[in-house]
Length: 317
Image (cartoon, rainbow, N blue to C red; front, side, top):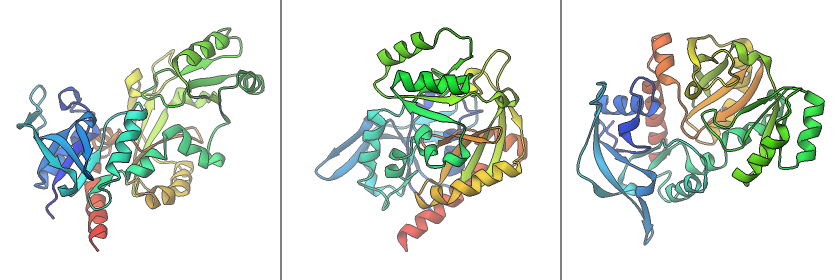
C-alpha cells in the first residue's frame, strides 16, 4: 500500500527522538515508503470549501541532533492526502477545537487519525466520566461549596485543571493542608472552566500505568513511578518508566472502554490506570509507545500503521 501522509504536529525540531510517539510513527511510515509532509496547526487554511496547509516534505532518522530534514514549504490540499495524523500536543483549547472542525471537512475521505469529531468530543478528563464504575470518586465543578463538601467526605484529594496536560497544575491537598481556598482562587483567575477534584489514590506511589489501546484493544503497558515527594506520575514531571504487565483489572477496564474507542474511530489511545481505577482516556496525542517497544521488544508503531491501513481500506470499500 502506498499512502501519502501529512502530520499535523508541534515543531519537529523540539521532539525527543527517544520518547516521542509521533517521531516513531513517522519513522515507521517512512520505512513503509510513505511520502511525509509536516505542518503546524497554525498553517491550516480553509476557504472556498477547501482545506489547505502550508507544509514541508519531511524525512526523519534516528540520529540525535540531526533527526529530520524539511523541504521547501508549499501549500498542499489535505483532500489530496490519504492520511492526516493529528498529533499536536494539548492544551485542549479553542485552537485545538478549531483544528478538529477544519479537519472534518476532509475526513473520512482523507483518513484523519484520530477521528477529529470524536477527538473534540473526548477530552481525556471528560470522556472518562462516561465510565463512572471504573473511576475513583470524582467531582467536576466551579462551585467552591461542592468542592469543600467533597473534601470533607474524602479528606485527601487531588485538584487539577480540567483541560491541563503533562501533570501541569495538579495539586495534592492533604487533610491538614490550608491552601485549598487560595488554590481555588488562583484557578478561578487562570481558568474559566470548572476544576476536577478526585479522591487521592495512595496507589500512585507504586505508579500510574499507561496502557496503549489500538482499535480498542490493549496493545502494551508501562508503569510510571513518581519520584519521592511527588504525587504526579507524568514523565514530564520526572516519573520513571518501568516495565509492567496488564493485570486482570487492567484488562477489564480495556474491555469495558475498547468498543467505544473503536466505534468512534479513536484508533490510537492511551489510558491511565492507578490501582484499580481508570483516571484518564487520552485520544489527543497519546505517548508511551517507544518505552513499551523497548521493554517488551515490540513495535507498536507498526501495529498502529497496520490499523490505519485497514481503516483506510474500509473507507474505500
